[in-house]
Image 1 (tube, each protein chain N blue to C red):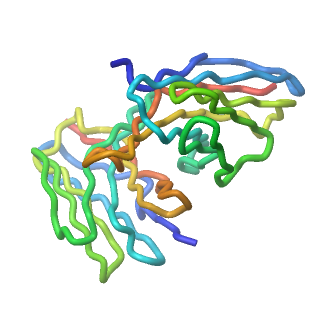
Image 2 (tube, helix red, strand yellow):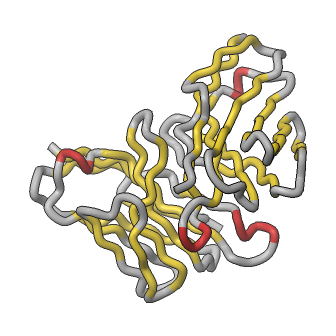
Image 3 (tube, rainbow over the protein chains, first blue to last red):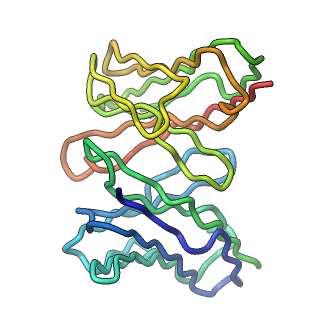
Length: 112
Length: 115
C-alpha cells in the first residue's frame, strides 16, 4: 500500500528565510499531490495541488515541486512570516475511490 | 456558502455511551469523509461516501457507523464509546467536477473525550 512520509515533525526558522518541507512516498507515483495547512484547533485548508506531469507550481510565496523519480515533493515558503507558523500536511491519492492519504505533518514555527 | 459544518465542537462521553457527530455540507459535493486525528498520528480515514445511499469503510472503521440519506448530510455514529475513541474528528467533502474535483474541504473538527 502507498505510504507517505513527512521527514520533519517540526521546523524552526527565522522570519524572512525560506522554509522547505519534504514529503516522500513509497510506492506508485500518484496522479497528483496536495499540500494543506492546519492551524491549531482548526481543520486543514487546501493550499496547492501539483500533477505528476508538472515539475513545479507557484502561488504567491508558495512553491511546490514534484519529482516522480525521487518520489518526493518539496514545499517552499519564501520570505517566511510568523503568520506562516502552522502544521503543513502532504496528501496524495492512495486508496480506493481516489481517497487521499495524509502525512503526519510538519509543524513550522517562524520566529520574528 | 457555509462549507462543511460539524456539530458538536466539543463533547465528553462516558465509556459505553453512544452519540452521533453531525456533518452537513452545502456545496453539493458527492464525496464525503470522516477522519480522525490523533496527536502525532496524522489523519486516518474512518468512513467515506461517494453519494447518497453509498458508504464504505476506510482505514479505521471499527466502533463507528455512518449513513448517507441525503447529499448534504453524513453523520458519524459512535456505539459503545471507548477511551481509544478519544480524538479529534473531521468531516470533509469534495466535488468530482472540474479542476476543484480533487480538493478536500474540511470542517472545523469535533473534539471528543471518552472517560
